[in-house]
Amino acid sequence: METTTNYAGSNGMQKENNPLKKWVIILGVLAGVFFATTLYFAFFAKPVLNMEYSKVENSNIELQAELDSLLAEHERIKAQYGDLSDQLSEKDSIIMANAAQIEELINSQADYRKIKKQLARLQNISQEYVQEMDKLYKENQALKEENISVKADLEQERQDKENIQKSNEALNAKISGAAVYKAYNIRSAGYMIKNKGNEEPTDKAARVKRIKTTFILGENSLIEAGPVNVYCRIAVPGSGKVLTPGSGETYSFVHNGQRLQYSTKTVVNYDKQAQTVTMNWDLMSDDKAVKGKYVVQVFTDNQFLGESFFTLK
Image (cartoon, rainbow, N blue to C red; front, side, top):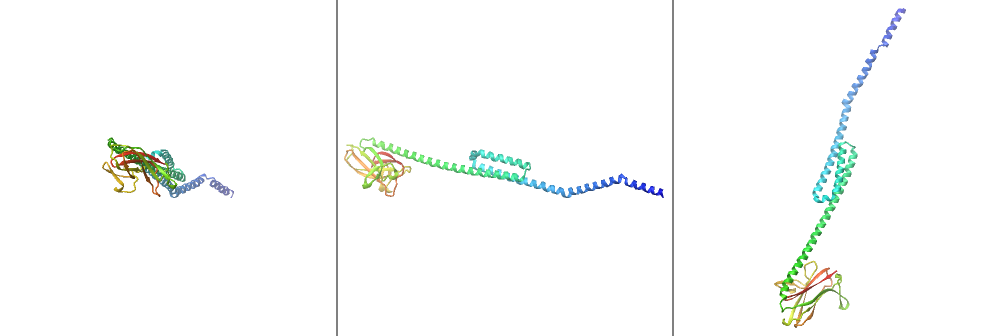
Protein backbone atom coordinates (compact mmCIF):
# COMPACT_ATOMS: atom_id res chain seq x y z
CA MET A 1 0.00 0.00 0.00
CA GLU A 2 2.77 2.44 0.80
CA THR A 3 4.63 1.61 -2.44
CA THR A 4 1.60 2.38 -4.52
CA THR A 5 1.11 5.71 -2.82
CA ASN A 6 4.67 6.88 -3.43
CA TYR A 7 4.47 6.08 -7.18
CA ALA A 8 1.36 8.11 -7.60
CA GLY A 9 2.97 11.09 -5.95
CA SER A 10 5.96 10.92 -8.25
CA ASN A 11 3.81 11.21 -11.44
CA GLY A 12 1.94 14.24 -10.11
CA MET A 13 5.17 16.19 -9.57
CA GLN A 14 6.39 15.36 -13.09
CA LYS A 15 3.17 16.82 -14.57
CA GLU A 16 3.36 20.01 -12.52
CA ASN A 17 7.01 20.65 -13.39
CA ASN A 18 6.75 20.09 -17.22
CA PRO A 19 8.17 23.37 -18.87
CA LEU A 20 7.26 22.49 -22.47
CA LYS A 21 3.58 22.85 -21.85
CA LYS A 22 4.02 26.44 -20.60
CA TRP A 23 5.95 27.52 -23.68
CA VAL A 24 3.36 25.98 -25.93
CA ILE A 25 0.66 28.01 -24.20
CA ILE A 26 2.70 31.28 -24.42
CA LEU A 27 3.48 30.77 -28.08
CA GLY A 28 -0.15 30.04 -28.80
CA VAL A 29 -1.24 33.30 -27.14
CA LEU A 30 1.39 35.31 -29.03
CA ALA A 31 0.33 33.75 -32.33
CA GLY A 32 -3.25 34.70 -31.64
CA VAL A 33 -2.31 38.31 -30.86
CA PHE A 34 -0.17 38.51 -34.02
CA PHE A 35 -2.98 37.07 -36.11
CA ALA A 36 -5.53 39.49 -34.65
CA THR A 37 -3.19 42.47 -35.21
CA THR A 38 -2.56 41.41 -38.79
CA LEU A 39 -6.27 41.19 -39.45
CA TYR A 40 -6.86 44.66 -37.95
CA PHE A 41 -4.23 46.42 -40.06
CA ALA A 42 -5.23 44.49 -43.15
CA PHE A 43 -8.96 45.19 -43.00
CA PHE A 44 -9.44 48.24 -40.75
CA ALA A 45 -6.34 50.42 -40.16
CA LYS A 46 -5.03 50.49 -43.76
CA PRO A 47 -8.26 51.84 -45.31
CA VAL A 48 -8.43 54.51 -42.62
CA LEU A 49 -4.85 55.60 -43.29
CA ASN A 50 -5.52 55.61 -47.02
CA MET A 51 -8.58 57.80 -46.53
CA GLU A 52 -6.65 60.30 -44.40
CA TYR A 53 -3.84 60.46 -46.97
CA SER A 54 -6.33 60.96 -49.79
CA LYS A 55 -8.09 63.70 -47.85
CA VAL A 56 -4.83 65.63 -47.29
CA GLU A 57 -3.85 65.17 -50.92
CA ASN A 58 -7.19 66.52 -52.14
CA SER A 59 -6.93 69.51 -49.80
CA ASN A 60 -3.48 70.34 -51.14
CA ILE A 61 -4.74 70.14 -54.72
CA GLU A 62 -7.64 72.46 -53.86
CA LEU A 63 -5.35 74.98 -52.14
CA GLN A 64 -2.83 74.90 -54.99
CA ALA A 65 -5.60 75.45 -57.56
CA GLU A 66 -6.90 78.44 -55.59
CA LEU A 67 -3.40 79.93 -55.38
CA ASP A 68 -2.74 79.36 -59.10
CA SER A 69 -6.06 81.00 -60.01
CA LEU A 70 -5.27 84.05 -57.87
CA LEU A 71 -1.81 84.46 -59.41
CA ALA A 72 -3.17 84.02 -62.95
CA GLU A 73 -5.73 86.79 -62.33
CA HIS A 74 -2.99 89.01 -60.91
CA GLU A 75 -0.84 88.56 -64.02
CA ARG A 76 -3.84 89.26 -66.27
CA ILE A 77 -4.50 92.56 -64.49
CA LYS A 78 -0.84 93.58 -64.79
CA ALA A 79 -0.89 92.86 -68.51
CA GLN A 80 -4.16 94.74 -68.95
CA TYR A 81 -2.84 97.95 -67.37
CA GLY A 82 0.55 97.74 -69.09
CA ASP A 83 3.16 100.31 -68.03
CA LEU A 84 0.94 101.58 -65.21
CA SER A 85 1.72 98.38 -63.27
CA ASP A 86 5.34 99.60 -62.89
CA GLN A 87 4.07 102.25 -60.47
CA LEU A 88 2.84 99.52 -58.10
CA SER A 89 5.95 97.33 -58.20
CA GLU A 90 6.25 97.37 -54.39
CA LYS A 91 2.70 96.04 -53.99
CA ASP A 92 3.41 93.43 -56.66
CA SER A 93 6.49 92.25 -54.71
CA ILE A 94 4.38 91.84 -51.56
CA ILE A 95 1.86 89.71 -53.46
CA MET A 96 4.55 87.47 -54.95
CA ALA A 97 6.29 87.05 -51.58
CA ASN A 98 3.02 85.99 -49.91
CA ALA A 99 2.31 83.58 -52.77
CA ALA A 100 5.74 81.96 -52.34
CA GLN A 101 5.13 81.55 -48.61
CA ILE A 102 1.75 79.88 -49.23
CA GLU A 103 3.39 77.59 -51.80
CA GLU A 104 5.86 76.41 -49.16
CA LEU A 105 3.04 75.78 -46.67
CA ILE A 106 1.15 73.67 -49.22
CA ASN A 107 4.24 71.62 -50.10
CA SER A 108 4.97 71.01 -46.42
CA GLN A 109 1.35 69.92 -45.87
CA ALA A 110 0.84 72.55 -43.18
CA ASP A 111 -2.44 73.05 -41.34
CA TYR A 112 -5.31 73.54 -43.81
CA ARG A 113 -6.89 76.36 -41.84
CA LYS A 114 -3.59 78.24 -41.62
CA ILE A 115 -3.14 78.06 -45.39
CA LYS A 116 -6.74 79.19 -46.03
CA LYS A 117 -6.16 82.16 -43.72
CA GLN A 118 -3.02 83.10 -45.66
CA LEU A 119 -4.91 82.78 -48.95
CA ALA A 120 -7.68 85.07 -47.68
CA ARG A 121 -5.07 87.66 -46.68
CA LEU A 122 -3.45 87.42 -50.11
CA GLN A 123 -6.87 87.88 -51.74
CA ASN A 124 -7.37 91.13 -49.78
CA ILE A 125 -3.94 92.40 -50.84
CA SER A 126 -4.78 91.56 -54.47
CA GLN A 127 -8.06 93.48 -54.24
CA GLU A 128 -6.22 96.51 -52.86
CA TYR A 129 -3.79 96.21 -55.78
CA VAL A 130 -6.70 96.27 -58.28
CA GLN A 131 -8.29 99.28 -56.56
CA GLU A 132 -5.03 101.26 -56.58
CA MET A 133 -4.40 100.31 -60.20
CA ASP A 134 -7.88 101.47 -61.19
CA LYS A 135 -7.32 104.77 -59.37
CA LEU A 136 -4.02 105.28 -61.21
CA TYR A 137 -5.74 104.53 -64.52
CA LYS A 138 -8.49 107.10 -63.91
CA GLU A 139 -5.97 109.75 -62.83
CA ASN A 140 -3.88 109.04 -65.91
CA GLN A 141 -6.94 109.34 -68.17
CA ALA A 142 -7.88 112.65 -66.54
CA LEU A 143 -4.37 113.98 -67.14
CA LYS A 144 -4.49 112.88 -70.77
CA GLU A 145 -7.83 114.63 -71.30
CA GLU A 146 -6.50 117.76 -69.60
CA ASN A 147 -3.39 117.72 -71.80
CA ILE A 148 -5.53 117.34 -74.90
CA SER A 149 -7.67 120.30 -73.82
CA VAL A 150 -4.61 122.45 -73.06
CA LYS A 151 -3.02 121.57 -76.39
CA ALA A 152 -6.26 122.40 -78.19
CA ASP A 153 -6.42 125.80 -76.45
CA LEU A 154 -2.78 126.52 -77.27
CA GLU A 155 -3.32 125.51 -80.88
CA GLN A 156 -6.37 127.74 -81.11
CA GLU A 157 -4.43 130.64 -79.63
CA ARG A 158 -1.58 130.01 -82.06
CA GLN A 159 -3.99 129.96 -84.97
CA ASP A 160 -5.67 133.15 -83.77
CA LYS A 161 -2.32 134.91 -83.49
CA GLU A 162 -1.27 133.59 -86.88
CA ASN A 163 -4.51 134.76 -88.45
CA ILE A 164 -4.19 138.19 -86.86
CA GLN A 165 -0.55 138.43 -87.96
CA LYS A 166 -1.42 137.51 -91.53
CA SER A 167 -4.29 139.96 -91.54
CA ASN A 168 -2.07 142.70 -90.16
CA GLU A 169 0.65 142.04 -92.72
CA ALA A 170 -1.85 142.23 -95.54
CA LEU A 171 -3.41 145.37 -94.13
CA ASN A 172 -0.11 147.07 -93.41
CA ALA A 173 0.83 146.71 -97.06
CA LYS A 174 -2.21 148.82 -97.99
CA ILE A 175 -1.67 151.35 -95.25
CA SER A 176 1.79 152.11 -96.64
CA GLY A 177 0.23 154.39 -99.28
CA ALA A 178 -0.18 158.10 -98.63
CA ALA A 179 -3.89 158.42 -99.23
CA VAL A 180 -5.01 156.24 -96.38
CA TYR A 181 -6.84 156.72 -93.12
CA LYS A 182 -4.78 156.47 -89.98
CA ALA A 183 -6.01 155.87 -86.47
CA TYR A 184 -4.13 156.85 -83.33
CA ASN A 185 -4.44 156.04 -79.63
CA ILE A 186 -6.86 153.18 -80.10
CA ARG A 187 -8.10 152.24 -76.64
CA SER A 188 -10.71 149.74 -75.50
CA ALA A 189 -12.02 148.93 -72.04
CA GLY A 190 -14.95 147.55 -70.08
CA TYR A 191 -17.35 149.94 -68.35
CA MET A 192 -20.00 149.61 -65.70
CA ILE A 193 -23.13 151.76 -66.02
CA LYS A 194 -24.03 153.61 -62.84
CA ASN A 195 -27.13 155.50 -61.89
CA LYS A 196 -28.39 158.15 -64.31
CA GLY A 197 -26.44 156.48 -67.11
CA ASN A 198 -23.01 157.46 -65.82
CA GLU A 199 -20.26 155.06 -66.81
CA GLU A 200 -17.07 154.05 -65.06
CA PRO A 201 -14.20 151.85 -66.32
CA THR A 202 -13.78 148.44 -64.68
CA ASP A 203 -11.76 145.30 -65.29
CA LYS A 204 -14.27 143.08 -63.46
CA ALA A 205 -16.16 140.94 -65.98
CA ALA A 206 -19.19 140.63 -63.72
CA ARG A 207 -19.66 144.40 -63.64
CA VAL A 208 -19.13 145.15 -67.31
CA LYS A 209 -22.17 146.41 -69.20
CA ARG A 210 -20.40 148.23 -72.02
CA ILE A 211 -17.24 147.81 -74.09
CA LYS A 212 -16.05 151.17 -75.32
CA THR A 213 -13.45 151.80 -78.02
CA THR A 214 -12.07 155.27 -78.74
CA PHE A 215 -9.48 156.47 -81.21
CA ILE A 216 -8.41 159.48 -83.21
CA LEU A 217 -9.00 159.36 -86.93
CA GLY A 218 -5.97 161.28 -88.16
CA GLU A 219 -5.70 164.27 -90.43
CA ASN A 220 -4.97 163.58 -94.11
CA SER A 221 -5.49 166.17 -96.80
CA LEU A 222 -4.99 163.55 -99.53
CA ILE A 223 -8.23 161.81 -98.71
CA GLU A 224 -11.47 163.10 -100.14
CA ALA A 225 -13.84 164.51 -97.53
CA GLY A 226 -17.14 162.75 -96.92
CA PRO A 227 -18.80 159.98 -94.91
CA VAL A 228 -16.62 157.05 -93.86
CA ASN A 229 -17.92 153.71 -92.60
CA VAL A 230 -15.98 152.55 -89.53
CA TYR A 231 -16.36 149.01 -88.16
CA CYS A 232 -15.29 147.62 -84.80
CA ARG A 233 -14.73 143.88 -84.26
CA ILE A 234 -14.55 142.57 -80.67
CA ALA A 235 -13.18 139.02 -80.35
CA VAL A 236 -14.48 136.90 -77.44
CA PRO A 237 -11.57 135.43 -75.42
CA GLY A 238 -10.71 131.82 -76.18
CA SER A 239 -13.60 131.25 -78.58
CA GLY A 240 -12.40 132.61 -81.92
CA LYS A 241 -15.81 134.29 -82.25
CA VAL A 242 -16.71 137.96 -82.66
CA LEU A 243 -19.43 139.79 -80.76
CA THR A 244 -22.12 140.74 -83.26
CA PRO A 245 -25.71 142.01 -83.02
CA GLY A 246 -26.85 139.46 -85.60
CA SER A 247 -25.79 137.01 -88.30
CA GLY A 248 -25.77 137.35 -92.06
CA GLU A 249 -24.67 140.13 -94.38
CA THR A 250 -26.64 142.81 -92.51
CA TYR A 251 -23.94 142.95 -89.83
CA SER A 252 -20.91 142.33 -92.00
CA PHE A 253 -18.51 144.05 -94.37
CA VAL A 254 -16.05 142.91 -97.02
CA HIS A 255 -12.35 143.29 -96.40
CA ASN A 256 -9.72 141.99 -98.83
CA GLY A 257 -12.34 139.85 -100.49
CA GLN A 258 -13.41 138.28 -97.20
CA ARG A 259 -16.73 138.94 -95.51
CA LEU A 260 -16.31 139.75 -91.82
CA GLN A 261 -18.87 140.19 -89.06
CA TYR A 262 -18.64 143.39 -87.05
CA SER A 263 -19.61 144.23 -83.48
CA THR A 264 -20.42 147.92 -83.93
CA LYS A 265 -20.54 150.33 -86.86
CA THR A 266 -20.52 154.12 -87.09
CA VAL A 267 -20.45 156.63 -89.92
CA VAL A 268 -17.85 159.41 -89.55
CA ASN A 269 -18.27 162.64 -91.50
CA TYR A 270 -14.63 162.99 -92.39
CA ASP A 271 -13.45 166.53 -93.20
CA LYS A 272 -9.73 165.80 -93.58
CA GLN A 273 -9.18 166.98 -90.01
CA ALA A 274 -8.30 164.85 -86.98
CA GLN A 275 -11.30 163.87 -84.92
CA THR A 276 -12.13 161.54 -82.01
CA VAL A 277 -14.33 158.53 -82.72
CA THR A 278 -16.17 156.56 -80.03
CA MET A 279 -17.76 153.14 -80.61
CA ASN A 280 -19.76 151.29 -77.94
CA TRP A 281 -20.91 147.71 -77.53
CA ASP A 282 -23.68 147.47 -74.90
CA LEU A 283 -24.48 144.11 -73.33
CA MET A 284 -28.07 142.97 -73.05
CA SER A 285 -29.52 143.10 -69.54
CA ASP A 286 -29.19 139.33 -69.05
CA ASP A 287 -25.76 139.00 -70.76
CA LYS A 288 -22.47 138.69 -68.89
CA ALA A 289 -18.99 139.51 -70.12
CA VAL A 290 -16.47 136.68 -70.46
CA LYS A 291 -13.24 136.77 -68.51
CA GLY A 292 -10.00 136.91 -70.48
CA LYS A 293 -8.06 138.96 -73.01
CA TYR A 294 -10.10 140.83 -75.65
CA VAL A 295 -8.80 141.83 -79.08
CA VAL A 296 -10.53 144.83 -80.65
CA GLN A 297 -9.92 145.66 -84.33
CA VAL A 298 -11.03 148.77 -86.19
CA PHE A 299 -11.66 148.92 -89.97
CA THR A 300 -12.97 151.19 -92.67
CA ASP A 301 -14.41 149.79 -95.89
CA ASN A 302 -10.95 149.58 -97.39
CA GLN A 303 -8.50 149.62 -94.52
CA PHE A 304 -7.45 148.05 -91.28
CA LEU A 305 -6.94 150.98 -88.93
CA GLY A 306 -5.45 149.12 -85.98
CA GLU A 307 -6.26 147.16 -82.84
CA SER A 308 -6.24 147.34 -79.07
CA PHE A 309 -6.33 144.87 -76.18
CA PHE A 310 -7.81 144.72 -72.71
CA THR A 311 -8.36 142.04 -70.09
CA LEU A 312 -11.32 141.35 -67.84
CA LYS A 313 -10.88 139.42 -64.61
